[in-house]
Image (cartoon, rainbow, N blue to C red):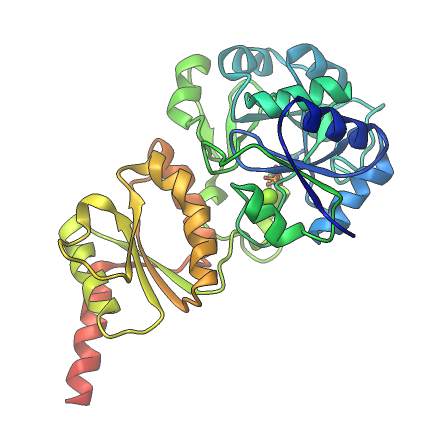
Length: 353
Ligand code: AMP
Ligand code: MG
């Protein structure tokens, strides 16, 4: 199949909307990452999303709507969902509520709940409006690869597999939406994103974060969000997260990447040493910039044949929690302190001398 790439102007959006209505898949930009969309009401098209991505059949999709009214047609609204949607929609927040029986269970991978989001990206909104139906869409990557933040990334993963990509430039946030269970009275974050636990607590009074957000599920353990079970966001390189003060991390990254071919040091700009070599890559100036740059950098590492990446661990608050959630999964939860890594380097040298 030839994949067409259309500029996301009025004509491109109308053509994409036609495709959605006739049961095809369309990749489109949102403010978080690019999505791979189909009509929520077309079970065969929704099924085709799983096939195109190679997505496990038990990992549900997010239904994209224009606002609260559309969302209420798909899910059983709760007072908490109302409060959160009023505060953060349209935007990078996905709400989990009970699914209405008329919505195909294929969207929810058989779960009794459904994930709902009203995106703020003008192209995503225009597409939903023109299609006249909610659009079920996970991220537009092959399963297990970093989510796509540009049309180029989508072409890399799904070129030849889907008919159409709408190109609307780079996604602003760069990480997937915050996923919140809104079925009870207190919001429970299942996946951190740009709408942070701190922001949710401000409007809801309090906010919980699922414990599995920052650790690996144990064999057979219940996953409050099926996405937690799956390998995710993985570059081809082996990755280790490095914790410690800025100085300690800079020293460890310097030692670990010196004379090490195909090895990268990824860190915030302020700890990168002056005159650092090309093995140093900047995550940006803060966690927000790191979110925007992360998936791009992981894909770039693949292109350059990088085999080993050491990354500065960020503080797990605000947007830092979202970045760390993706980094920890990409690293298979290999998180070490700068001190133990430096000690290891030292021991290795001692042994060979
Ligand atoms: P993606 O759109 O590719 O970022 O994936 C959607 C994410 O939302 C996955 O991590 C899913 O596991 C999660 N999700 C979707 N629907 C539900 C649901 N009903 N309950 C819990 N998590 C969900
Ligand atoms: Mg995804």
